[in-house]
Length: 338
Image (tube, rainbow, N blue to C red; front, top):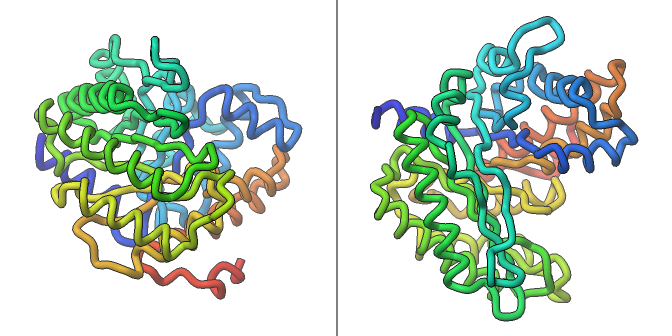
């Protein structure tokens, strides 16, 4: 089991490749569809995701795709399970298993992620449906007096319990603590919150006997708050993020797959590229982007069958650009080659 988990984890962070996060909740996908004036029906959601998954040559740059519960059960228009569509293109199916972040009782402004009840049974079903990895997201806010150590510990504990159950079921856990960009905080405050969160997380993973070699970390880059007057440069973001990881992330982790976390598509690629230019690192530095991969594709598709090819072209372009950022070879020339 250990060897299989390690092998899958390594496949997910293979050179030149990253993960497509297509696990938007019903509420989030509705907001995305609202932006193109498209109703969020099951048929439209299936059509959109099928358009993404059938993108020619996507598997050359995307190693795996995180699915939502609805999507892992859906069939393509021709009756092929969407899981099989991914597998036939060389992409590994994964599944989001948390049920969302809820207010942490007695801790105003802080959240804890739920979904542990019945998770062992859900994992068994997801494995049967073809999932080979899973994801659980924790949300950490920066604000007046927060994050508290209690909030950080509560989320680290839940992430570790989830990860142990995932490995028990034969799935690689992606542990995702996200320090949100919301606010006007400095990059220094983001550094401190990220460092404390990652140290607590790895302490809990060790306590729960989670194999790090069969685990991936998905987390934020160390950034200025999006409303901060002073915005850090790509070079500063790369330097502070790597400094944070060197002080908190064990070398046994095969890879760190960044979330875009509200960054626009091009800055997310530029920042990843800047970090990999400073390599080599103890871990693969990859990506697990949602909006930063999908936004141009959604805009080009507009819900129209006649625009499928245009939507796929935009997705492939972003996948190629981020694939290049994996080894620090992304450039403006590549960006303009679309």
